[in-house]
Image (cartoon, rainbow, N blue to C red; front, side, top):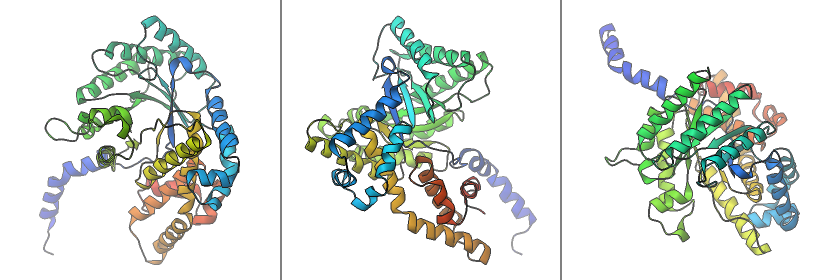
Amino acid sequence: MVFNKDFFDAADKTLAQADRLLADKYRGDFGGRQPIHTCYVPADKLSPTTPADWGASALQVIDNHTPTARSFAKAIGAQESAVEEIFERIKEKLKVQPIEDLRIDFEDGYGRRGDEEEDRDLQSTLESLQFLNLPFIGIRMKAMEQVTRERGLKTLNLFVAGLCAQGKYPENFIITLPKVTFPEQVDVMVSACQLLEKQHSLAARIIRFEIQIETTQAIMDQEGRVTAAQYIERADGRLTGFHYGTYDYSAAAGISSAYQTLDHPAAEYAKSVLQVATAGTTVRVSDGSTNILPVGTVQEVHAAMHNHYRLVRRALERGIYQGWDLHGSQIPTRIAANWIFYRDGLAAASKRIKNYLQGASSGIMDEPATALTLARYFLRGLDCGAIQSQEIEKLTGVDEQALRTIVINKGII
């Protein structure tokens, strides 16, 4: 053999650092649920009824403007048959779980107020939090910029202390760090999390955060390096996601207000960079929001619904599975776009994963990456409600746990 033991030993030594990097930094998505949206509510507006209120707003849009599957399909620009299949289930979800991820906003949506007022609203939100049972929840603190840094860190401190005083730090709690420009701001956030964990005797890295991408420097630094990739490295394993901030980022890039949209080329570039930076890591990407709400005349409502459906579907097709919603009236089109997206591909995806699983035992092997992508497709559809649990085994020949095992094993069965 041309390659002897000395060669293999030398290869192992040369590639040891690369092997560790792949194992530590590129473990791949953990396969857990990702919400289809994040809903932002100013801190002074939060109440125990907020999710129900958003659901009521969503149902009101349907009842007043698209009361039938046919009218809903026409408004969003989808096939009537696709909507008929899910129309009643959408309304049921709006009654049961309209919000998947709630972010209590102490930043732009809340504004700069006096310390006493923010402290008072903070305590009120902690009280409301005890009555909210949501898959994901958290706060958006003020930025690490000099003018808001002290207040942001004070809010973080008081909120974590309040959560711990209620008995247990929630595992589904995520902190949003906005307007991150330089990696050093991430360093300060990590230090703050470490101090809070020590103060409250919490497990290491239980305090997790996401970063909003709202400045051009968050995409590329002054030396032409991808800054977001540096954020991942500096976040000490705490970073859960990057959220694109439509309007702040567009303004930073010099785009006129009339053209600040989720599908502007500048937005597409920024999100493509984020996708490359996060690929293979445990960090996820979320799209931003549109401020065009379905309100006004029937024509205006339908136009806004069509636009929102189009933008959500566009993001899904580009591999971005989460976005922001600013009002309950946007949730019907969010759900519809997700559910139709996953159900559109069911037949083809079912055939492909069955072929892969059968090939694994018959000597014909597709790429494990194929199985991994297909398993994630089914699990995302299941998590958001597009695919029902009883359909999984019928469609794929395996149960949900088998699909999650494929994700954990990165497609290897």
